Amino acid sequence: RGLVGSEMCIRDSPVRLCIVKGLLENGGCCNVTYMQNCLNAPQSTVSQHLQKLKAAGIIEGKRDGLMVNYKICNEKIKELLSVLFSD
Image (cartoon, helix red, strand yellow):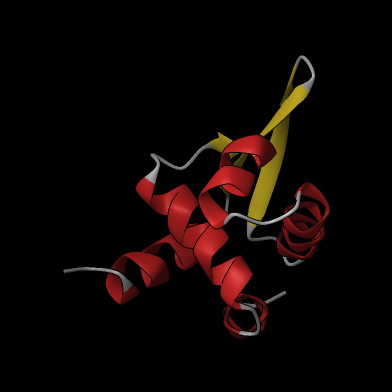
């Protein structure tokens, strides 16, 4: 998916926007439980949005025992988000 398609995937959902913003602000890496607590959303909802972000090539997950830690893997998206959320 190109940058425009990836950007649309994020913009289509406030939850996905919060997820990638949280990843960016949290040093780029966190797990579903952390996101679930931050978003005050059910684990199933967070997981569904993570799958869409993974399919769009925006994030990737790395298993660490029973947990999967997610990070933004698309540098163009990182740059775009940094500009969008800069103070």
